[in-house]
Amino acid sequence: MSERTPPDEFEDVDKTVEEEWVSETTPYERVRHVIAHTYSPVSADTVANDAQASPKTARKHLNTLADEGFVVTDTGEHGGTTYRRSPESLVVEQAADILEHVSTDELVTRIAEMRDQLNEYRTKYGVDSPEELTIEQTNQTLSESVSTQSDIDAKTIREWQTTRRNLAFANAALSIANAERFVDGNLRTMNGSPA
Image (cartoon, rainbow, N blue to C red; front, top):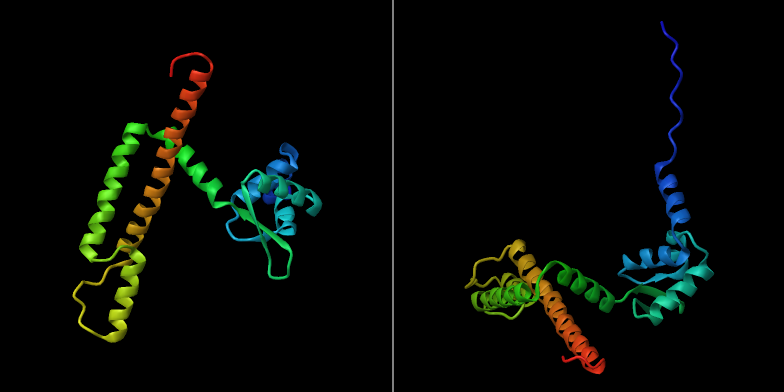
């Protein structure tokens, strides 16, 4: 019988990754990373814990991010300040991602297609939004009246909502692209070159 030595104890992988993250990033980067994925209000202490920073440091960086428009502050139920990712920063991030991967001409085509799809939903179901459709179906079910429309499955509701959301992001991306062209045109004009 051979003698085997027991394997070395496994290091806590999460702890190792966390230590690497802390050693390779600044507190500001960690706070920004944590709040970038925070959509409901949280305290500075919560962000500090997740970002491996002191509450004072987290609060300082959160306030800087709020000044930059990346974070929204609210008053919590106990009167303290809470923080969350600003919707505007998310829209700008999504729009920038779209512009990185889709040409302006293709974006215009996709916007037209999404508008057509939304109009088809409105025409087919006789309401302006998936929420109105859900309410109408619920009211019909509660009144036990015979429905003039077939029951709409959850997949259709999700697709309608997703198309509407994607259209909003695409419109934002197109607006940013147009604004950038305007700004670039003004910069060329101000520098003496023709726009």
